[in-house]
Image (tube, rainbow, N blue to C red; front, side):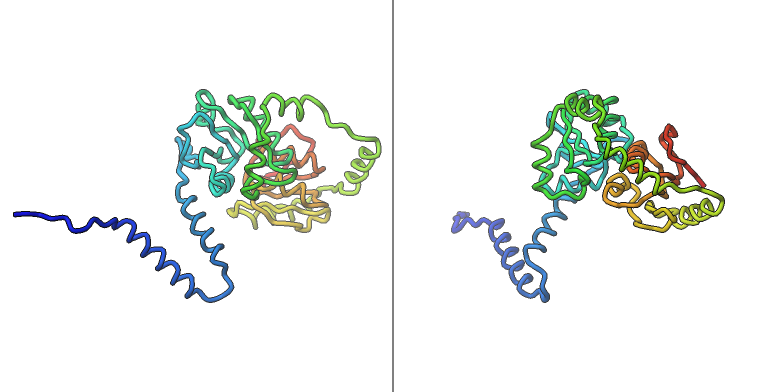
Length: 289
């Protein structure tokens, strides 16, 4: 028997061409004002996010590429998702403000860049992580913004502007911030205006709000009459405080972390209601029902 080769064909190329042509027809058949670029971006995002993996015993969200010498550590899963969307895969989240053992171990063999939110809470997290793990660099989101809400351009810009951890901590914690006399007077005046007394009636109202939030993992920012100003995710309290005026009380379905309490002190918050508190070393009135 004799075998002759008449033609060699790249079937992979044919399949690719078929998929492209089919995609074109589908896009042409879509009705409405949806931009094809938006759909394309959504598909790309979905593909990238599908690559997010759990790491270690605490199932920390990661971009899946932790084999190199450099890794980026962020606060939570939403931050990891946003960095992966920006094309950064050597990222891992802490699943909150408490430093997991996995991050400590990674710091022994890898160069860690810690990427935190642009508020006091982020700085407190940076201080805590640097005290307990080997961190080489720190990158910070723009003032008042959270890592999870940044654009890809902002993320890359922040990472390029990262600074050595020692320099960052020296700038933010070794020196007390300077205030003019006028700023101090304004701060005191604002605190006096917002000051509230918590009696049994107010406690009852706070308990009702706490019960209403139970199981939602959300938080309510309240005004001086305990009226609801905003309801937000419990993990975004620190950043939201900077962007919301007139807040005097916070009710959280979850734990009031050191970062939240630090941001609350900075914002002259009078009362925090939560399930648990990472610290009670504060002048803020802490309640748990």
